[in-house]
Length: 265
Image 1 (cartoon, rainbow, N blue to C red):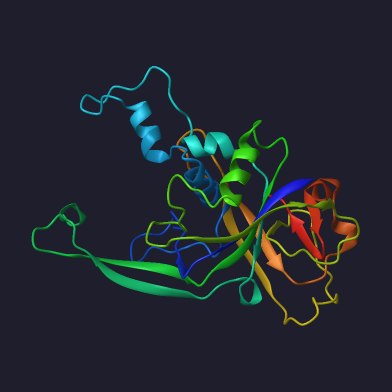
Image 2 (image 1 turned 90 degrees about the horizontal axis):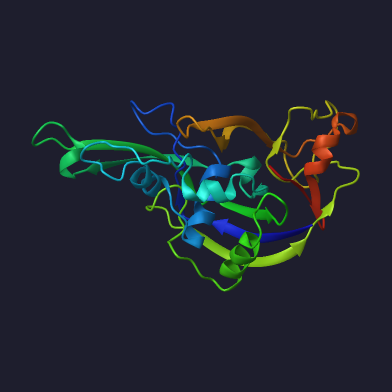
């Protein structure tokens, strides 16, 4: 299978968790599938949530809806079924996080005159991933070719960023590569689903590394009702996989890029 591979990094990143926002805004530990789809959509110039709202409410003043409702933002309509693999390069599978405190001085940020809104955000420090985008039936005809051309020619309609426009993305080393179906798998280098996978209690650890096991419920899709996140637990670890636990469905998602074993989400 052909795939587009590129390095994605930045000085900082912020992928907001929607469930806590009272004291501070917290971030997911890695770029998730929806944020990555949004970034790919920005590179191709596809619409986002604002364009979706404007399409659904063309006459905002009187609140009338459009005759045909746009269920998803434009980027998600295109990349809803894309298959991607995310390989983190952080220490022990994750990146350092720091709480940033700053002031929001715009007039609408505070309901009380003369007061300044203090914002606390948790940022990832120096994140770096290798990203793979599969060229398969998850993308409509012609989309992968447009995406590959944009990356290989270093072209982007909108500026790509890591969660917010405060965090510009650095994209390097784009390449078209052939990934092959995985056979016997000892380790998985990317984020992966662990629904059926198990890890050997006394198994090996990937050579040259200390033990690491990271797991987090992360967004993998949007629902049609309100575009809310659909979550799934994802794991990245250097623990040896129990061969007997690998299902047929897992094998359909497992590929190799030379020595690297990838799981396509």
